[in-house]
Image (cartoon, rainbow, N blue to C red):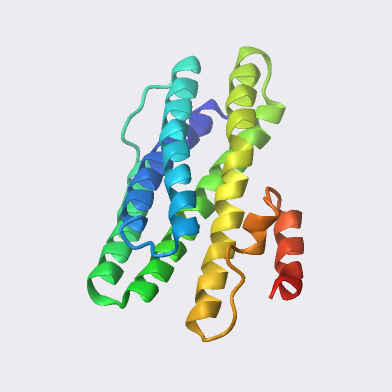
Length: 196
């Protein structure tokens, strides 16, 4: 087990969660749909909690937050996502800005979801107190991260469908079926035709 790389991964996870807070705060400035606004407000609060969970996990594993090259890259990407949302808000019609905000949320949540999946895999191979600490964190957060990614992708798809003049399913099937797995998301997407 590569402890140095585990520690780097935790640094990037912390930065991803902190950046996620900023992405949701910016996205909420563009949201038009009331259901999506409620969802993003919930995800913002959960993401703030995820920051604390990662900080607590790092402390339990004896990892001090620090600047690393990887963490700086993650910060740069997060800032670019926020900048894209602000650019859309300043220059695009409100429905288009809402879609851009949703797309940036999907980008952020894709990285975030991958971070937690990798930590879960590491935790499966870990032992002792390290395993207990990682398992406690991942079991608390994993379902929320699945929901953030799969529901956000559904919102993005349906808002984009509406922008093309087609009939969207709102809230999206992923939301209606409370999807928390990739298989569930695929089934919900397939079932959308029945919901139109």
